[in-house]
Image (cartoon, helix red, strand yellow):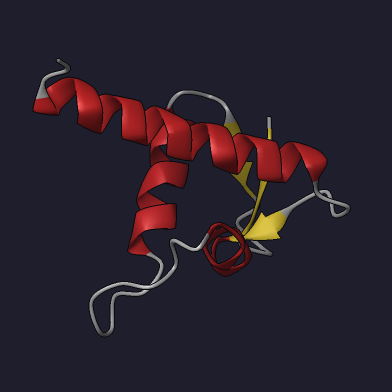
Length: 79
């Protein structure tokens, strides 16, 4: 039986894979956080804090060198 830690890490990995797939298969070259979050059904959140789940995952992926954000457009793309 997987531990809670392993379940959490697996879930994070699955969410990152979904973001990667969305960016890789999008008809656009880059997407905003809101587009990513809404497309994956993870944009909702605590009142006033919508988009934190997808934004946190994007930050993790950015640190890993997988995605990058255009500072001007605020859109995310694969590196």
